[in-house]
Image (cartoon, rainbow, N blue to C red; front, side, top):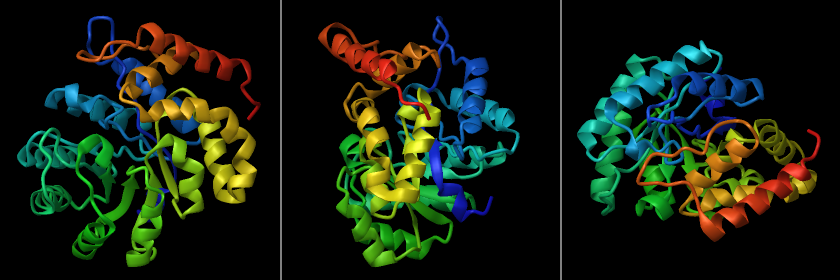
Length: 301
């Protein structure tokens, strides 16, 4: 797989499965990753927000990468999210990821501390510089309170040849045009919000870092292919079925909700690591209504 094509297609932001005693369930993680690749996904992105990375210890992160690299046996790249409280730890994680055989990196701003371009730029530069692995910058101002503008992204692209892609999750579809206006095809564009996938692809995105793919891999791959090959019209009916589920990806409890969908379709457990707790009460009832409706009306793919 050439470097640039690594960013094409559906790349699951894989959830981190836990056992009943709150350990990482490595056996399930390995089989789940294989299942996603078998369904047509092009790589695996662990240690992201959906992977509950902020609740994992450094050693747990490394163990997850070892499990995934071994499970995929070179069939598809493992592209971990590189996020930490300190730049020092993020750089260390990036170097370890390369040593363990990962194929690329998804570079995030630091957890918790969010400030200006001088500091945030210095942080992501340090991570991108730490290895020669192909990197994707993750822009998610909603979750991380740091917004990398098209001008700032262009600045980074000018400095680092291994910065190859941007995962855009600002929820502003105009950002795709903004980045392309400055950079043309220099960076591969990826959609980072599930309920903007058809719109993002129409604006030139070549990849999708997907969440609900954890529960519906074949449907996610099909939706992406329809949007890519035939545009919004071709994707319309599958998108209509999928959208109520895809919208579960853009609320604060998205991790709990996506894991609940996984459990309901038999592709995982809804166990999350505290401080998260499984959704309850009215929120759970509403989610189950959406999930049950989707299961009952699932189209043939």
